[in-house]
Amino acid sequence: MEKRAHFSGWTLPLLLIVPQMAITLIFFYWPASQAIWQSFLREDAFGLSSEFVGIENYVVLFEQPEYYRAMVTTVIFSTLVAFFSLSVALLLASQADKNLRGGHAFKTLLIWPYAVAPAIAGVLWLFMFHPTLGTLGRPINALGFNWNPMLNGTDAMILLVLSATWKHVSYNFLFFLAGLQAIPKSVIEAGAIDGAGPMRRFWTIIFPLLSPTTFFLLVVTIVYVFFETFGIIDAVTGGGPAGSTTTLVYKVFADGRSGGDLGLSAAQSVILMIIVIALTAIQFRYVERRVQY
Amino acid sequence: MVENRPFRTFMAYLTLIVGVVVVAFPVYLAIMASTFDTATIINGNMPLTPGDQAPENYTRALFYGGKLAREPVSMMMVNSMIMALGIAFGKILISILSAYAVVYFKFPFRKTAFWVIFITLMLPVEVRIYPTYKIVADLGLLDTYTGLIMPLIASATGTLLFRQFFMTVPDELLEASKIDGAGPFRFFKDTLLPLSITTIAALFVIQFIYGWNQYLWPLLITTQSSMQTIVIGIKKMITTTDALTEWQIAMTTAVLAMVPPVLVVIFMQRLFVKGLVETEK
Image (cartoon, chains in turn blue, red):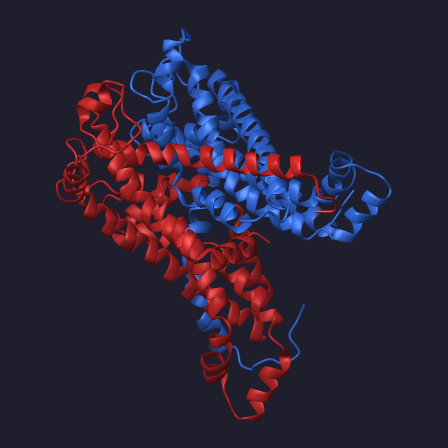
């Protein structure tokens, strides 16, 4: 796409683009390339000198059992949040799409958690499911379950999944609703005339037509779980208990904070970059082809 | 709906009402907790109807702060507000200018410039935190608003959004302005800017929420408590040793932290939806 008409001259456009370029270069390309470069270096204990060690940092990283553990945690966490937030959002959106009276009010009442910071979402759920004082956590313990997200890794993961899902349903809901409203009513009516009931119409007509939206939301949700849930993890579990909720991003943060190996931390960052670029590239290719069935 | 089935309509209402209740319940609890004293909450039998400690809790949180965070929440809110507004305005300013250059001018390396900006779309600040931290530290920007805001402005969302919008503006407008003798400045100020108001507002809403809710970056670069943002402040109020946690103050702060962005979403819902849908394209 190009404009037919243009202004001539190139001093002015360069001046206009300079602020964005400067900020992008200083705060984006420079640190990103630093991370890549550092991932091939090893610093001595005092950070005074460093030597080029090739892929040694990556080799060391992939020999760490903790790294695999963080990877598995991340996969479990994103799978659960993606599954729950997408299915709940689709359920709610398909109900809200039914031209109900007060439909707009429902929309407003369902989308506002998008505005709540992840860390705060985490704190709200921690308070609600607190083992000794939570309005829901205390009854669970009273019923004889041994619920304690501060001591039990599985419980901590459940709490994280609940709060991350709670926050993200609103986003997926909005996009599903927009997707549903874009489906022509005539297609659904044609299905009805052919004798398909509501469930059959949903699974054979609506759901396939929604597949581009679903795929887009799947990628966005995975990226959300990878990065934005950092706030939830840090505020609720701090990666614990005993590292059971440490995701890949949290590990980069925790390793760097404890003053650990800079090269190792950089290597982790580089791997994360590759993962995000891969996810984004898949998404762009898919969206471009606009595959529907 | 194609056919009218009362039972299915009833189920739809039921599902939505359950959804709304589940969505609202954690926040309702936080609001209730902000109206009780510590003892009531610690006992684990907090009533589900409001108590009478709200004035006390909100005054204490806003003007004195908790025992652990030691900073009045009103100060933290000012910091969050400066950061959120700085990010929103900064991003709008630099991205509308660069989009204008990319769309309305032909200059050497235009395509390259566009791609250099475009790629930043892919990498959130989380994957490059420590190198970015080091650069900000070397520039002497730790514990400053500039340091809080600048690195988060470096992203392509705004530029892409404005580029997309400028592409829909008819070419005839520029041709007409040129015939009228308008230069790049006049055309931008008198024609393009008024047309972009909705897009600007939509981007503002999204970026304000994004900025207000930032967590990792402020956590890293603010060390003085006077620079703390409210989202970070809450985390510091909750300790693993339960006895020290003043839950009523933490929950009061959580409520205060949710008010500005939630109000923005509710009252600017159309702009919010527009911004959200269009920045993600």
